[in-house]
Image 1 (cartoon, helix red, strand yellow):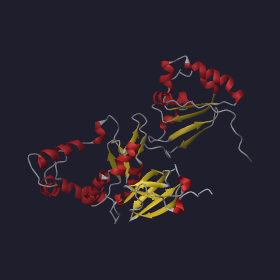
Image 2 (image 1 turned 90 degrees about the horizontal axis):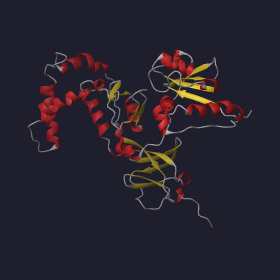
Image 3 (image 1 turned 60 degrees about the horizontal axis):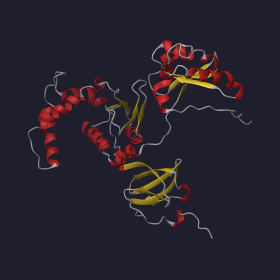
Image 4 (image 1 turned 90 degrees about the vertical axis):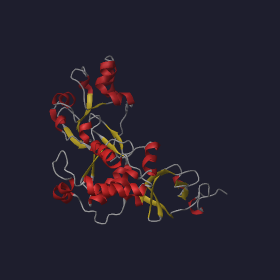
Length: 349
């Protein structure tokens, strides 16, 4: 049985509207509600339905519009009163404090809880470049895992733009960089991002940086990077780990051995994440994608399409829609070279 089509669809897509919300819009332009009321009055005859999707709206702002609302979506609200304005029930206030949960109301009595997920989206080229060309973020974390002899179940991160693409301070919605998401999956830990503009959520990690600078590095010179690393290893072992900590009142090495070491998940021979890179590329007009200065051919039908490129183990795999479309040995065609004949479009006679 064919699914009936919608006669009319009205889409309002405005960045400022999305950012500020319906409440601020109606506060700044109260007459704007009349436009919504006109759409509501005549819309149903034309096959147009109004959908209210909101997380925060003050009572009285709708001014009669609620009569014409065919559907409502309520995300987690800041109070039971706001939930009642959106859904006529306080339940949205009691949703889990994580992104994606909401309620869909389809009539005056029936509403259903749902869980949405961020599936995909275009990644700004600058942010894509940050992690593709600089793996020091992951090198540093993997070095810490090796030193401590295990992986924590949760890693708290600051909101560095190379790692956290978006963090809404009100809804606490967090969007991770795809490579950070893959890295966390590789090592099986959960990512937590510090609350924006709330320094207390970072603990005292900045104090640790100051301690290392003033106690281990200040006033010293090093002939090479390896000499600095050797000095820091000895200083950690002979000074930092065995001092009596000002907050805990005990040495860090004793506290770690007693309370923290057993909470870490064993490394269990897990290979380094950066040994296999996961990249996004767009197929050029020459039927190829470029990685590290080399061009790798792909089927000509994918010209202009985005593909995922996995580099590791001496090979380059190209995937599209989850399927492998090309496999090369690392270090293939040079930029400007012709793609392999099997990948090129057929010539017209």
